[in-house]
Length: 283
Length: 336
Image 1 (spheres, one colour):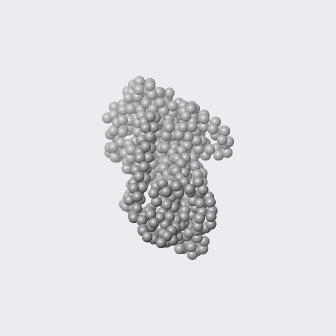
Image 2 (image 1 turned 135 degrees about the horizontal axis):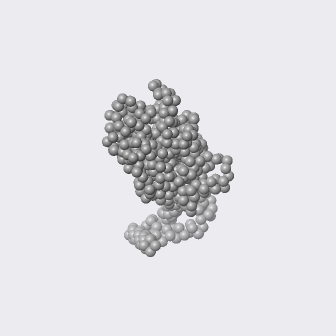
Image 3 (image 1 turned 90 degrees about the vertical axis):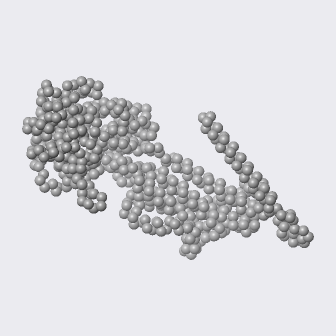
């Protein structure tokens, strides 16, 4: 007990030290970028240029500025002041909705299809060329096709998430199902268990950890892709928010968005890791 | 399946084996639960280079309530043979008749205890057994299933470990669950594939004792594959000796000359123990390898292998116990 406590404490302290070093380095870097203030400017022109010109400030925010921005977002996440000014909570909710919808639809297709591929070597052989060809395609390459056929930018984003979530789930499900221990299947056979009952009572629980691993990879990729997809389709979502902050030249906004994207991605991963623990078994 | 061209007339082989059995048993003719007739299994060679015969001409019977062991080196197709009996694999030729019907696949009448316990690791001990019981009696209520499972869990002395997962059980306990699962469906025949080979000697001993008790109490017809000679002597009424593969044959069927009710602790004191043991060791060490020479003896019929009854010189069965005389002893037995 004491050793594990010590271990956790040491690691935690080290994490804090690393964070402080990082923040200090960041702060020093920004301070070093400060140049001389421009002199003799027309006051009206100076007001337009902002601090970067008048006080020689770097466009990069200092850590405490990002902290203040983060706090502002956290304290009022759901405000809606028009299409270009929504709270970060609303933007994240849009993105999460797209990711979960696309991912859910992909799971509905990939798990049964993966089951089929895993059970039948013939279907595996037949579908393998298609899977191998489509798997390496960047999901964003589907975007123009989706926009043209679906004619709705939000649905197109969901479609892109759907496409990129399919492959890891499909491949892992097929692999998990194909590699169920022969002796468990033999047990079911000698007990004259029907194929459907074998699928649900033997193959599914046996392959569940592998399937969950596939889902975990999929949702990670989906969360990566949604930012890029929303930058393209615009309108709402955390990806659009990042791009919008860039257009506003608000590096502070971009950095705080990065922090939120990271936090949500971490949360999704932890969620699926817990789900994986529920179906894990020790042999 | 029915391609065996020069199949020995089955009635004859039946009457012969039946006769030899009756010599040792009460006068009621015992029902044949398993009849294996001219079984052969070939596997294709890698690279389309013909086929290799793993074993052929395998014929033997198991009577109701009888315990038969098959001994042979690894590679002689023991597990393949058991898989065919279980219905998990099909023979290249020959038949397996169980309780009067030729088998065509797995059946709940034939329970299998696998070499590795083959428990589902995500199910508790209770659920593993319940999975089998629910398959046998799909219409039972869950309370009935539980009660039935509990009976068999108690039988293998796992009371208190019902809700443990296999990973939380020791090797011996896992195999106990495997045995309870097999018995729980009340099969006509119990098939076991080296069920204790992965266990340490002490655990193996106690499980063998329990198996003896359970089989006796339920009059279970059993067929077990093993390479442990003492296990075979303790458990088996008859021992089928298989030669080395490929092209393995049943070389001899040994009747256990030790009295019923023998136990692990007292069987080695019986005068027939060492003759039995020596006979089996001699087979495993020498004869199983050099069987080709023995088989060329003019009147060896692989489908009707000779019966041997190794016993002490003073014993009634009159089998020689000296290993070097085994071949002649076999001939003598066959003549009888």
